Every structure is written in structure tokens, then in C-alpha cells.
Image (tube, rainbow, N blue to C red; front, side):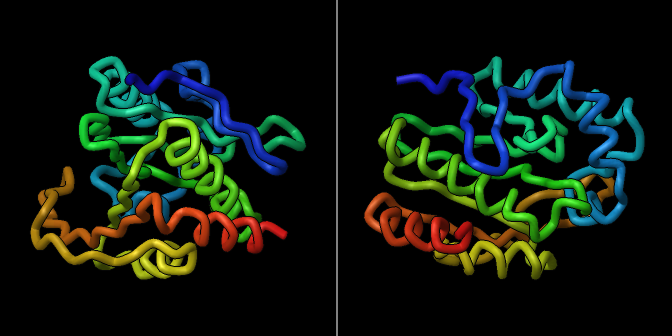
Length: 193
């Protein structure tokens, strides 16, 4: 089994396979310092965003990730990005990560629907048994959001990653198992209503 680029469409957003053509719109949506404060590296200009997308596409070529642009259905505006990463098909698992949205789209339902689309595809189309999320210990907002959707906190990996600045990053791991997916899905659908 392989994971191939796919468009996942919902009511509010769609997830399109990421391409270099998305760079200008991603830069417009994502050049906000608060988005990158707890990320591996800051994105300060369109050149940084181009480098970010090139790296995502190189990872896709190596079978390590499947990146998406998040596009608002109502007007076709690119509002963020997400991806499948750390793909381990032999173990029927992957991670959903590198997710960010323009600050103007917070609390719009876009993140909830993106998670619903990604998880539905992972569990129902790809027949995976485990989806992982990780976030920095300091990112309380992300930790609370993952708990709210029903992801189970598994533990903290201390000094697990190092940011481009040299800052050591303690990462919290969460997961959703296939047996938990029906309840998580019902919760996500309820939140979108």
C-alpha cells in the first residue's frame, strides 16, 4: 500500500495536494510570527515559505509525508497547511502534523474540519490503526485542542527535537486508535454542527 496525493473536501475547507504554486498564497496567510514561535524554524518571508514547501515536497518524494494546502471552500483562499508525516505503513500508522492556519481563521471550524477529513481518510480509506499527533509541551493551546477532539495523551519525550535556533523542544505525544475513531468522529461532527 502507498499513500498518494488526494484532495479531501468538506463543507468549509478542502485539503489540496501541496504544490509550489501555493507558495505566494501560503506566505500571505502565514507570515505571522505567533504561528512560528514554537515551531522548528520561523517563516519570515516568501523565500522562507518557498523553502518550507520545497522541504515538504522532498519529504513527499521520499515517502515520508503527504502535505496539503488548506483552502477555504467559499472563496478558494489558501488559509494554511497540514500534512501526513512519519508515515509507517508497515505498522499501519502515521502522524498528522505541521498544521497551521492564518490567525484570521482561528475558531472558524477550519481546523476541526481539516482534522475530520485527515482522520477519516486515514482510518476509513487507508485502514490505518493508529494516528499520532505531537506538539511542544509549551503549546497549551494545541494540547487542549488535541484533548478536546479525543486524542489520548501518551507522554512527554524530553529534549526530543531541536529548533533551528538551538532551543531544545520537549514534545507531547497524543494518539487516536482505530477502535477510538467512531467516538472521535462523532465528536468532530458534533463540533462542526
